[in-house]
Image 1 (cartoon, rainbow, N blue to C red):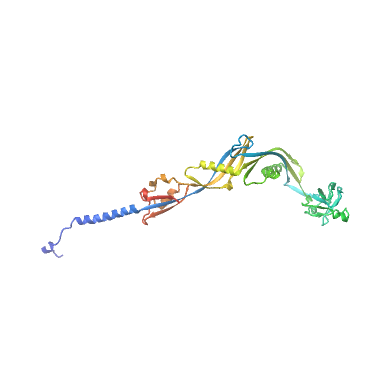
Image 2 (cartoon, rainbow, N blue to C red):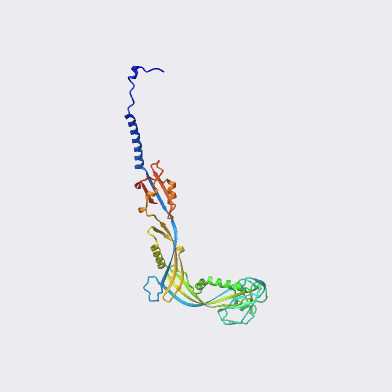
Length: 378
């Protein structure tokens, strides 16, 4: 190894300490600048998509009857009481078949200038040669019509025929053109269904007529639907009669009812307005109604009295739940990445989704400064 001469040694200077200090200062300054830039520029934007929830609320309302002393109310009901009788027929379920005598109604027309007497068993003949006979004597006024009953001349299902014109072969050819019969409904009974009436069948029939009672009452009383009115029927069965008893062998049986009804009319628009107001009053400050589902608005008559009717109503609405962002503690979000933010906001049932944006591109977590976190409702 070559030796350093005395002359060369004179030019080797000791390392100066301020050089390390300068380098360290530059590095620290750069790091500090990066930190300053990071914290001054970093930003997190969180857009919240609120959930839309269908909520149904129920309310009870006591509505004064308009002819009572409380007629000053905005929402009043009108009532009308009627008594009526309903009859419905049912076929037995378990039966055997046997030949019977077909029968039905016939309209007899007399276009002659004098009345025509037709005795019982008068023959009526259709174009296919099917012979029926008049059950009871009738008098058909001149230039008029009467409705009478006819039955097949023989037993058997072949007489269960459809509507048809009928001539009266016992009359002269000239009179047959002026006096004749017409059926509008099929003849029935040519094939009889004979069964033993059971208690179960009677109970099932009673349940069926009860379930359809409102519709039958509305049909009987000619109550027409009105978009502006709510029609409610309060009913009381005064009397029920069965045409047959358990164990009877029959083809059909019937139930007749004597019913007392109260027909109640309510202004639909006023009732819906009242229910909407009640709904609004029960909402929290952070909830907002998007729209009401009026197609699912329901009402049930609870009870009635001389001066009021009591209704139970149900109304669904789509409610938008919102966060109280003004008082939201942003510190809970410090340091969270996008996945952690998604998990955090999943705990709120009134939030359906969030959209997260970090800035600049290298930022991946929420900065630890409130004014660098923006939360908004989308």
